[in-house]
Length: 253
Image (cartoon, rainbow, N blue to C red):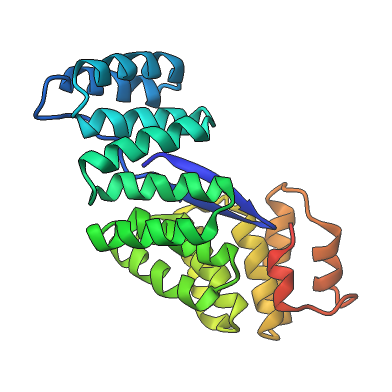
């Protein structure tokens, strides 16, 4: 899936678009396929040119509108992206992919309430979409609704157990509601999937401190130092007892 990085304090939320549509039963499947290749190769301007021609040739091809909206979104042209995705939804009102993409556009516009509605509609249209479940779970983290986030991210993890972004953000959400042992499990799962994840290791240090397991926290802190990554002074102060730890520290950079 295509991924949008959305940073919230120290955690990275990856709000991901559904996989690009690659074919159509109508007249322009080859154009869609070529355009998707161009998008994946970062040649967004060329993709837009191809897809603009495609929708002129066949204005009833929802897949072309969806791919064109995705290209505009990646170009950060939100106004055109929204307009084109609206065309896709006119043709296919229950398209989970288009509803998911609309949710991402609304997030970038700051319309969180609208994004929640769009992502919920995407999940209703396709309940097994780990992408939309993940995106909405991340959005709830952004709005500090951690319990709602946990429910959605747990469902996403069941569907996509090898995705370290899901386990990382689930660990963060568990930590914020005080479920420290579960948070540690998810952070460990992240490291198992992505061993060089310095942010996950920092999170584990804080979680152990919150759980009053200072020895384990010190071991993880030393592992972090040995990894060659820069260690934040605030984290060193927490580990050495020079600063009181709280769940808010999970959101430190």
